[in-house]
Length: 99
Image 1 (cartoon, helix red, strand yellow):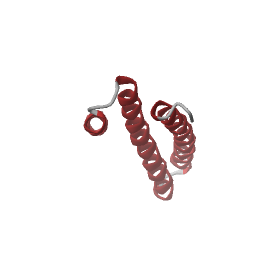
Image 2 (cartoon, one colour):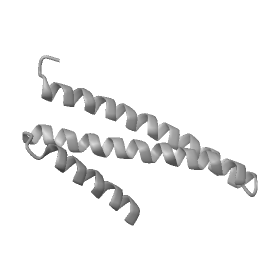
Image 3 (spheres, rainbow, N blue to C red):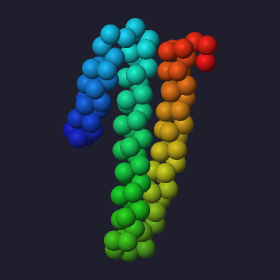
Image 4 (cartoon, helix red, strand yellow):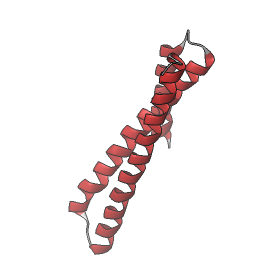
């Protein structure tokens, strides 16, 4: 949990630096985008770790759990990417309402 806290804190710091002079709604959208990008990257890496771990499974039960973890990580990554796309659309509209 401490590591995740550091990752989120870093994303928040970078978002704050980038959005310091933006209107509140736009600053919030930038912050949200940083969090979504961070979550997507973490989930992608998690899926890769589960997939790599399949080779090292000590028995069929562990192999099945690792395969399930990889599958769930892929699904969670896809859902987070979809949220990221939605968030980018929202960000575009905040920047240019004509979009």
